[in-house]
Every structure is written in C-alpha cells, then in structure tokens.
Amino acid sequence: MEEKEFDYINIIPFVDIMLVLLAIILATASFIATGEIPVNLPAAKNKEAKSHPAVVITLTADNRLFLNEDEVNGRIEDSLHRFHRDNPVIIRADKGVYVERLIHVIDAIKGSRFGRVSMEVTGR
Image 1 (tube, rainbow, N blue to C red):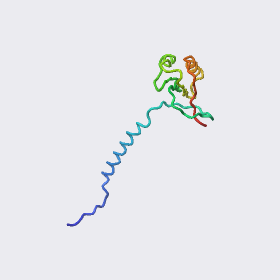
Image 2: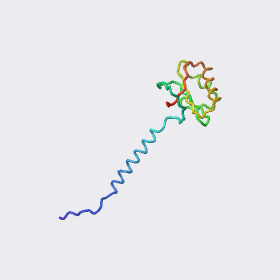
Image 3: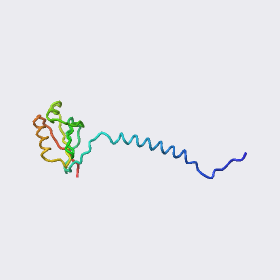
Image 4: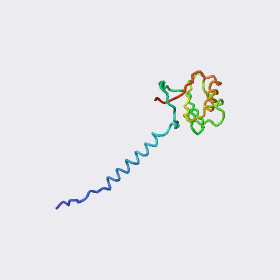
C-alpha cells in the first residue's frame, strides 16, 4: 500500500486550538481588570508605604464619592459612623477634584473624630 503525501498543511486543528486559547485569555483578562475605581492621583516626592487601611474615601474627577468602593449618595458623615474612630482613613482624590469638595470631605472626617487621616499619592 502506497502512502499518500500531503502537499498542504491542515490548518483547521491549529485554528481550533488558537480560538480556544483566545477564549481562555479573554475570560481571565476580564477578572484581572476589575476591582479598583480609576482615579488619576497627584504625584508627591515622599510617598509612605502602603498599609491595609480600614477606610478608603475616593473622590473621582466626575464628582462622585466612594467609601470603600461603595458610592455615597447622601451625607458622608452618616456613612462614616459605621467605622471605628481608631481606623486609619486614606483619601484618594483625583487631581481634577475641586479643592472645596476635598475640604468638605476632610471636615467631615475630622468631625467624625478620626485621628489618622492621610492622602494617597503617586511617586514622582
């Protein structure tokens, strides 16, 4: 019996494997990118080591306010009362946020008697 030689490469199994790999990569990439609110942080020369804060307040450029990744629609003072005053507070404010809005948030934190308040910045 004579063996038949192929003049071409069968590309269909190769395409099938590539499509499966592409589907796996796209499915896992969507899980990696979730979990953080995008904020354009201002830069500073002296950046402290990041700890695991109990309270994170985020101010976005479109004037939205988040408390530990939950959006605050009412007064921030009402939302801060569920945390203990010894917990550190880190403010993540976009550099496009109005200073008046930032000062209002800082006043609310101080009025709730939190002692350790800091701003998160990026290194230069």
